[in-house]
Length: 255
Image (tube, rainbow, N blue to C red; front, top):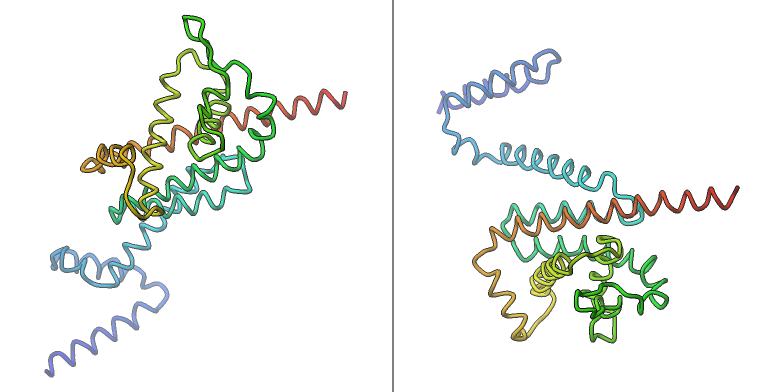
């Protein structure tokens, strides 16, 4: 007991020494000694070490999120996109696939809704009957055929297809396969997202999509990461190009 009391006093003395300016080296030496004499798994149990770890992880996630959206030009939603990216990363660390998908979906939803409201919908009536794609046999798809199909209203998948056509492919498609592939990936993400929002039973189509993903979540983490990066990068390039075009038009009007 006396030895324990003496050791506690020693710890207090060390603590006081650490507060003295110029003794920062002491922290390094103490940590080095602890690392050499104690198993890592025992050290990791301490709340201080766990807090340090969480702090470091948080700093890295903050850096990743900020860098990911660093050059994204829609400033009105940029901060929210960064926050949702950070939440997405935290859910991945927890291996919570459904909430990971929800946070990733929210980023795409935010981008889609903003561009749809401020660009696409404003010009829809003048664009809807234009030719979007012509097949080798002469058959054509109008913008409305490609984007809305038989739908009479604007649902999430229709808005995203509009985003794809106008701001990803820039209304230029030699084949429809890449367009359909990206729309299909969005649909997969959408169905996982709906697990957080929809009660009751799923339709046969929804269940088929969910079954395709079930048991392959580890692969789909990477698939959806790549999907987000691909969409955001291409949309970003299109928006920056649109911004340059608008500036050129304004300059010409002033001449």
